[in-house]
Length: 120
Image (tube, rainbow, N blue to C red; front, side, top):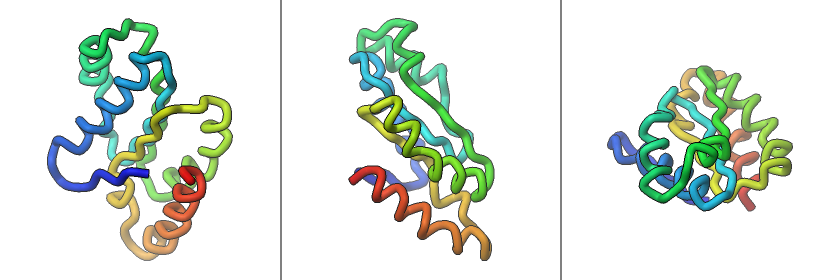
């Protein structure tokens, strides 16, 4: 597991590049988007720069969460998706940004624990 955190615009670019490289080489990638940050146009350009074609984009599977409850549900159901897709990259963007307030604080640790188990 690698954590890339910060306010720089470089953070999503790193995650996009990891997904694009995976897809261009014929492997699946899963992008769990916590801030509506996934940019399919930027990823498409990156896939092309890696020599991939249009079919490569179909290997990048995106799920978006807009609340801490949606992210909790996505991470909770991620095990089945990972078993089915066997991705070489799992990217979770802006995870902490959704978990504010009392409910967010209560849900954050269990979500991290599930991610830790899934990536072990």
